[in-house]
Length: 198
Image (tube, rainbow, N blue to C red; front, side, top):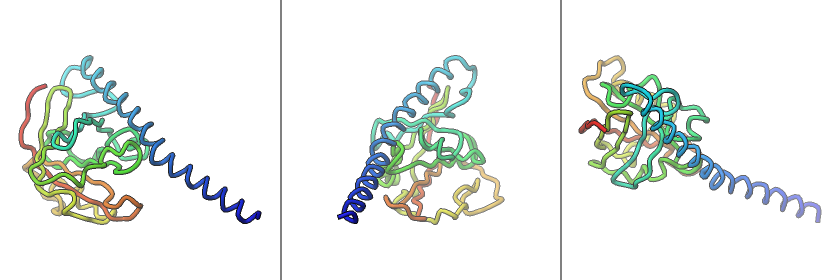
């Protein structure tokens, strides 16, 4: 009887943890993301130029998939990823020449990249800074390219060509390929298609 009671406790604790990860962290992260977007917009109103102060460096959306918007946080730590999409600071900023690399969760912590594997070649990725709307177009769909978590060539200014000087403006989107933890990462590449003032 004691063994069954112990098993029941373990199952309840595991179930509670899974529920928190799937529902709790997602709702909490969505609330934090909404605050980060609002703070970004407020910062843009009080700052001259195309640069917000502190917090998010821009706002990301996938207009061909949904109307959801996510703050682009300046880093890829667990804290950054718990309130939006993470930006690798050693990569290009929005609209700059080079490779801007963003990463996000598919399942927990708001799941900003939940639908990333549904992006197709030709779909748009929109990045909004304080003064400019950058529209990138997907050239390699995330469902078509799998790399390992250690494959850092996707962070190169010209992916796969370390040391080569970039001439174009591109975006790279990285997320877990599988819903359960594995080292497989889905990667999508796109290039800047248009810019327009806000």
